[in-house]
Image (cartoon, rainbow, N blue to C red; front, side, top):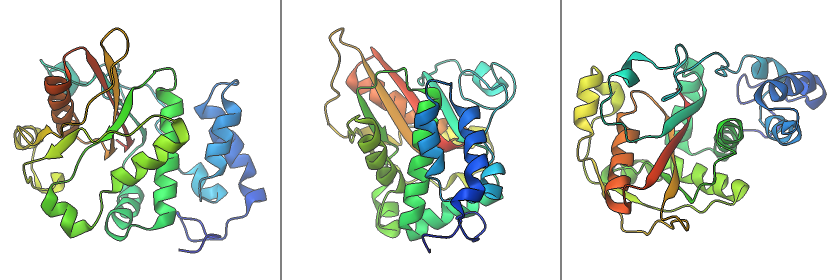
Length: 254
């Protein structure tokens, strides 16, 4: 991919033309005091002005628990009896454009896409979680077989970049011990939840706790579908690091 082309449409990146789109989006994502930081992040996205205006950012009311657009508590979250996630937040709606771009990143590992998705996660962090003092960042791990097939865990790459931007250390807390079918190949929410039972084990790395003995972990993944994967990860962390923890998840897509 050429550095002077838009990741969205392949057209030429004209910084002067996209300036108004950058100002508009940054203004919608940040308060007046945080606008300079958000402006810098948005301006760094390799998108032309047209594609930036079409970025499927979720601006409307959303579920306080999972971040789904709609009511303050969606039906799925209302029916959960043992919630392990403090909350989930996502920046973009998952559409066909996002699906194609994410697939390219997962299976080709394009450097520009790593930078693009890392910036999206950083934008999401400043929009939703900046006020929280996290003790560490961790990621949803791949099963060893899938990691060998793919060659890398795309979320690990993003976590390293996010850590460098935010100054929050990355900790490898989990191991994926159960090979599950891809979520796209599973039918229905119940099947997805059941497939994630016992899918993760503790990697053994210590969680640094604060003076009160509690801790806050930022759990990263690329997409939130039903939340079953993220909740399974959070359940394992709480079981091994101790119950006095808060696990917040952050994803690019919802």
